[in-house]
Image (cartoon, rainbow, N blue to C red; front, side, top):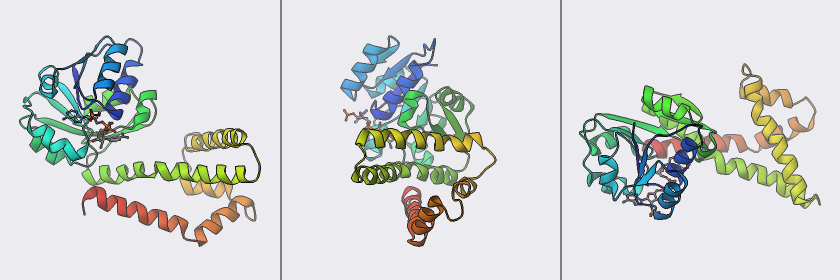
Length: 256
Ligand SMILES: NC(=O)c1ccc[n+]([C@@H]2O[C@H](COP(=O)([O-])OP(=O)(O)OC[C@H]3O[C@@H](n4cnc5c(N)ncnc54)[C@H](OP(=O)(O)O)[C@@H]3O)[C@@H](O)[C@H]2O)c1
């Protein structure tokens, strides 16, 4: 397999970094010349990463190509390119449907959507693959977890999960800010919060039969301080507002 990237920005660079961190990994990779600095850095770091003269040269030199330009320019970039029937196209472009990509990359016969996350650089996180595709799943499973789905709606719904990261950190920042406000040093507060939330993040793996609400109830001892915060936030409609926001993101992603 010779792997190509059209668009070598934050996400492609994370994939190449994760891939090349695997022991004995020698897949030849050819990347587009943009972004110039990222392409140059990857080519300098890894002997089997080469920079193509242009996007068409990427396609001409590889059999599997990952599309990773921003959605806003994807149509203009793709319509300039000549794909081959034997190209396996993996689109990472978040908000353009597989059907639309398939039409733009014809006659390429095999088109898969994948949604990796930047933490793939550290071999962490999960990639959604749609529709199920043995080779794409095998590729990404070396770099983290893979969730395969065959249904576009299921793909869109899972994509909504990725809209919650900023709020997650805002949640941690709220705790951090409050603790600091009460006079605890920033470093000490950060260390404590980080350690505790790392341990909490392991709970679903250590108790695989417990759903999230069950885990929440385990901590919400009747009359205790966890129950108090959960009740007060619930009464103020925080979680309902959060769920409503997820619904709006879903409608935006699905274009409905
Ligand atoms: N980052 C994420 O967390 C994430 C997660 C899931 C999916 N995605 C999807 O992945 C895709 C890439 O995202 P990203 O975060 O990596 O964006 P990005 O960092 O902006 O990377 C896109 C790259 O495309 C390059 N580019 C611009 N015009 C080009 C052209 N005509 N031909 C080839 N390359 C060109 C840009 O180069 P210049 O810098 O020179 O303009 C830029 O480096 C997007 O479609 C996004 O929806 C991203």
